[in-house]
Amino acid sequence: MGGHVGIEADSDKVVNFLPGGKFHCFAKKNNKHSSFAVHTVTNFHEILGGKPEAVKKAIMFIPVTIQQKQKFGSIASVYFKNTPCEYALMGMRCGAAAHDMLAQLDILTSNSQRKTYRKIFYPKKLRKRLLKKASINGWKVVRQKGSNKRKWEKD
Image (cartoon, rainbow, N blue to C red):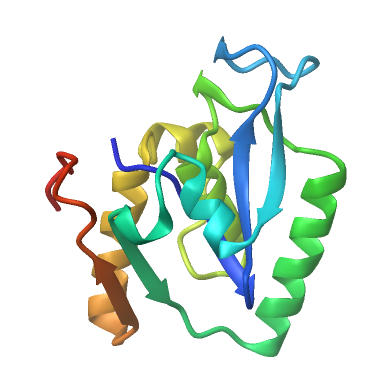
């Protein structure tokens, strides 16, 4: 439900949270099978299979300060070296991980990891929150319908 979530902080560099190795239903603190990675925009949109021009997308342009951008770079650098959480069905996934990073930048409300992954169980939950915030704050939103050959969820 909802696809995949990433944060593009620099041109053509999308930071996102991915599973790796054996998938876990429940997060394991000492046996993490996940990583934060950076992809080009094209590679990011190919993660779920298909061509970038054929995927449904919603891109929100969130204005940030220089300090927020620097802080994001610092957070990403630490997360690349040592993933703070594991990708698991009952744990952090891409939407919750993106929410966590945006909360650290004071763009979204901060919660504990457990509360975050329970509230942002799949990407649509984060997308709807960000679309609401975009509407309130006048952020630019760009949408792409996606291929007619695939059935997409409704927003």
